[in-house]
Every structure is written in structure tokens, then in C-alpha cells.
Length: 382
Image (cartoon, rainbow, N blue to C red; front, side, top):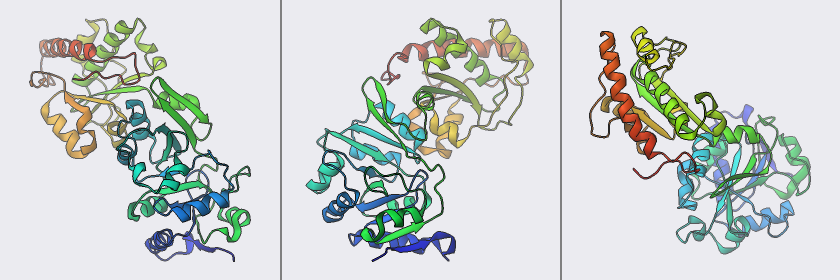
């Protein structure tokens, strides 16, 4: 019997499609979903008979793990409680998105241990677990409404080409699945990148949407300095910190990105494209640093999510960051360790900017000392 195919473009309400898919999965059926990469076929990870059927349909050989699809990057810690900082960084920056992270699965408190034994063997036969947060909105909604995670695999037979349209899914799997959600051709039409993260770094197990070069950039340390308008305090802090870190590593500031370190600044009330204050430019030139070409940028969701460390000039800035992006709270600190705010010199004479730069310079010395730039974890315990 051919599967039921639901075309999202003809659905009166996509929420009805989501509920149908959730019900089908709860009843032990296999459902094919569009993702941003290729079409995938899913089974409830709580239903061992459904997962067994998925393995049979795929023709997957023993020892070749299936992926576990989870709701969000925050859920990863439930499955890998001691998840490495590098894996956290990639999850935060790439999920939802086209990357599968392969992580060690040896923690006794892992939620994997709560799955049926045969499902554990299907997703973690070799002591690792592959986790993914797909970006397609329908599959995201299904994951949010499902009782547990989903076991997910590409909607094809093992060894065959990937299905990038619902028509290809039906041609390949036919009546072996019960429901196909059709949302046209997949956005990327190529598989997710599969990346194994280990203590010393990462290894690309399967090339996909993200190139190895892009993954190296995404896995690097990103420090963000924040003030109000991003025209004086934070640009000065950015320039000084780049110089200090480069000196510590024995390289030039322009070589930091090649070493996987990015330092930038932003303002919580900044206008895009503004220039540094004239006095800030002068104060930095007196230190043989240049900020005249700096262009201000507003603090955005992407910057707040990608930053490993957000350093704000005042408590008010920190409060504003956390109010907007609560998930950034554990990564957001004020510059001064003794609790003082760095006063805004805007509108004042050059002496105010010099004193401000002196204060920032002194505090940055402490921060640079606290950061271990030679390991994937980067941050020492503060």
C-alpha cells in the first residue's frame, strides 16, 4: 500500500499536519519528513518495534548507528551530561541546522539509558551518539510535541542516493512507510555534515553542507565586548584585547582568526555603520592602536548566541543582554571584576577617554590571564 502523502503547500493549517505526524509516530508508524538537507524517515525513539522497522526498511547493517533527533541544543546535555565545550559551541552556533554531532556516550546519567535497550543499540552501538536538531519548522514542531526524541535517518535504502523530494521518497521506500510530508525540494539537497567531537578537537566523518573550513571557523573562540553605542568603550576594548591576545600567542592581531580566535564589539543601542568617536581614535593612536576604520554594529541574536564570552562595560549592559537573551547569562560578565562600571566618556574631553582606556586596559589584563587560548575549552574556571 502506498503511503499517505500530505502536501504542505495545500494544507489549510500546517498545525494539523504536525498533529497528524505526532499521532502517527506515537502509534508506531514511520513518517518521512522534509529537512533542510535531505528527506528523512523517523520513528519514535520510545517505540522499539518502530525503530526495528526503520532499521529493516533502511537495510542498515549492524553497527551503523542511526541519528537521534532532539528538540534543541539545550537538550544535548540530557544525552551527553559532560558534553565538551567545543561540542557546546558547535551546537549553539549550528543548531537548528545541517550538522550531526557525534559525541561520547558513556555517562551513566545519559537520557539514552532511558530508551529501550534495542533502541540504545540502534543509536549507540559503538559508545558514541549522533545528535541533530533539524531546522525544518514542521519537524521542529513535531519534536516539541513528541514525548521523546526521534530516531532519524535519510529516507532511502542504505547505499542508495539521498531523496531530496517527496516523490523520490515514495519511489524509493514506497509502502514501507505510512506517511510522507511533502514540502518540495529540500533547501540544501545534500546531507548534513557529520562531525565527531573529541577531547582534542573534531573530525569530519562525512562532508556535507558545512565545509571543514567553515567548521573550523565555527568551532573557534568568539569574544564579544559590549557597550551602548559601540563607538568608544567597546571598540577601544576590542583593539586592546586583540593586541593583548596576539602578544600572548606570539602573533599579529590580524592573524588571530587563523588561530581560531575572533574578538569583536557591539552596542546594545548602536546604529550600524557608525564611526569611532574622534577622541577614542586619538586615545588609541597614543597606544599605537587603530580604531578609525571601526564600524559600529548593534548587538544581535546571532552575536549573542555565537559568543563564547560576552564582556560588558556596565551592569546595565549585562542586564540588558540577559533580558533579551537569557540563554547568554552563563557567558555574560562585566569587565570589572570588583563590580565597578566603566563610565561612558562620550561627550567629554580627551582626558576622559584616556582614563577610560587606562581602566579598560587594566581589567583586560586580568581577563586575558584567565583565558587559556591553547585548548578547545579556552576558558579556565573563573
